[in-house]
Image (cartoon, rainbow, N blue to C red):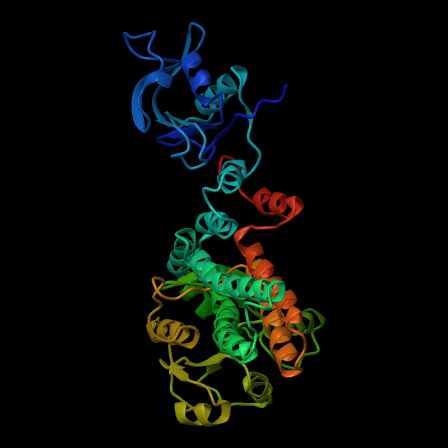
Length: 459
């Protein structure tokens, strides 16, 4: 018979100061009673102890002592999964942690699936689906902004906004249904105008949340950044400065970089996925030509282009090609090699590119801080306050919001076309249910399984 009590190692499998084995389910306390012994009190049963207490002792398999541990016990529903939960804090060796898990499984638990603890928290009503998804975002956060956004969503920032909109929509649905069922006592005269006044602000709120998804993607995933410039402009030197180590080969020979080189770096609170590219120029070298085409392709997909100009050399046809390409793109222009005699001026570059120009010396590490501040201001205007602002960082959420917005547009269209009121109710219900999928209401089991399958083991 398959037990409903699950167990898994909740910490990384490596040598560390501590390891944690987590147990959740109706058999959690009977299992720990069989394998936990306290020093000098071998008959002590943790199932009889108060919830949310920690106990010192040993995990044993019969007469064999496996490790000295601390056991934290939490009785449901006041636990992460809303079930009886045990956490065994042991020494962090790989072998000892695995042996404790094997012992727990031997005495009645089964191995947890990836994300099953959080899945149970969702199924037991401890978290809604948007909060559960925020858990994995917290784990995968790559910068301070991503972490703050994820914690904000875990605390219910998205849920609160969605629930507020759904309350307004369901009120109108209930009123319509009541009026259609009892027209003698509930009049719909003038209701179309009243409904329009409700729909307008709801549409604006949805549009604002959908618009935030662009910033939300940058928050969670980072800024896709491509460094462009003609050969020997200092692109690889810049990458090395940003990364903080010699990752790209730097020589005085033009065309040294022949392929794209990708690095993830952190600037203040932002993450950048930076691609160093081959210098843009017309060349007969077959290999270099492939590198140039890769550079152009990468630039087309980028969120940000950093155009590096060699200030000691006149602008040429290769520079003109890049300038034309970045005219309608998010870009920052770096006038490099300010440690040498300048041939190109900031004013000239600014007038030709239409973009902010920053003078730097990659070799001397001058101007890098100004670049960091400029990138931050380009993507985020002012300080980001996660207490008041909600950023949509999940594609599934964005799609659900877009579908709800379409339904509200349909309601407006029905009002304009003077359609019967039951048409309003149909589209309002579509919007209500669409928003509900963000919280996990009326979602199919396959989608739930797919979401939690992306979690790490033990979470």
